[in-house]
Image (cartoon, rainbow, N blue to C red; front, top):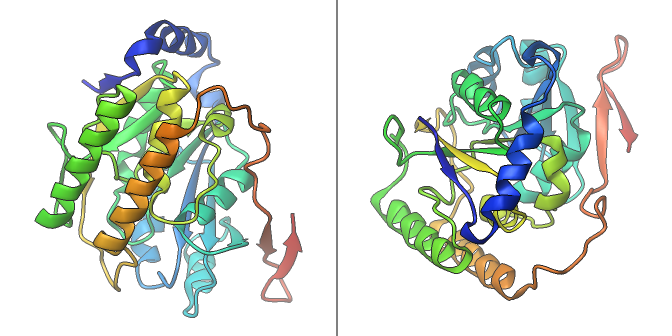
Length: 281
């Protein structure tokens, strides 16, 4: 069974949020979209894109200005893919651009390196359809695991998770894993406005502070298929820690523009006679 984790002080709010989901339309009428940030992932995309289940209605690839054939390969493997160019740098900005571009009811975050298995997407969707707001992958629940994470990174993840759980009264088992899915009306609460690998921590803290129902899903992380990760454990661990501190001192009463998180981006439209056309959104 999934592990439901909520902010202890807002259990009633979380239950009301879950109740909103119980009157949803049939599953067949709910659209599912996948957002995939990429940077030089041409050799990995055939494996990833061909494993996306048929239940997915839309795939948005957000490219960080790759110098290989990432975009060409993506379109060859999946002609219906939408290609977005992020306006800045970093995974956080890439995801924000993809979230802004997505048109679906449910949005799934998926890595392009083959580490997150698209075959697990139905589990995340089922958790959301069961009344949860946010489905969060965990490598540490029974049924999950990792063939990629090092002992050093795992220790750092657990330490940072302990800090977040203590500060924000959550019960997360895996703070820094990037395989998540959520209803699109969570976006104003998430308000993704960071650049780098701290994005998962930022999202996890903000959905908890908003009193949303978070359900952890066992997930197995595979090794990157090809290429080298841009993650740097010490550098990115420090960024995550700074993010935790900033979110802790931020008052929960701060009101943001619900649409203020949306970044500028450009979508590349493939044309029959041209390789593509850039259109700013």
